[in-house]
Length: 263
Image 1 (cartoon, rainbow, N blue to C red):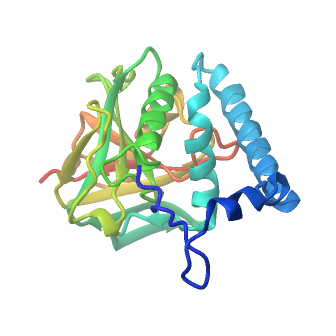
Image 2: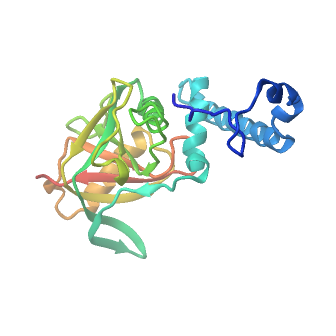
């Protein structure tokens, strides 16, 4: 890693001698109390966030490794406030409301590059947890750019159902929209299980819902959106998308169910 290349020169342009270096005390070289306190507070925050994720994941029989502490901290703090969460852009075509609540929206999404991974765990919750952790590592420097790429929302998961739409397939695809800065040249992932692909433009029908996402709630939301649509047959009927606007460990999650219109 390029560390910037430190030069041994003084402010006036002269070289620093060995005598100069020997005259610097250990106290002068050590971090200031304020810097040490900031580092300790950041480390404590990372420990708390990691423990929170572990507590939530344990309920789904998912282990969160220690090396996830830094990615979790970066995602949660938007890289110490250096980034804002960008929303996947779309054009609203129409919206249907009832009693002040959105029944569904019809949107147009342009073609764009996404990073995705398909996971085959025993439950939907396990798949999104393991898949999202891998995507988080890609966002947080495990990429050919070697930098934090920036968080976008929603993170989407593609699910498949049986013919009766009563159960979900074990194959769950977790996908991340590349920020506009990286759309033209997406950084390559170090993880060979992650794929970068340009998804075509699409017409999406969406319906919002809150709370946890699991097999029961997803099947219910698929049924609710199908009932709300006047012509559900125009949509693809073997796969659906769950769009999450908050991370899988959030207590109050904001989600949408998406139907893709047939090409």
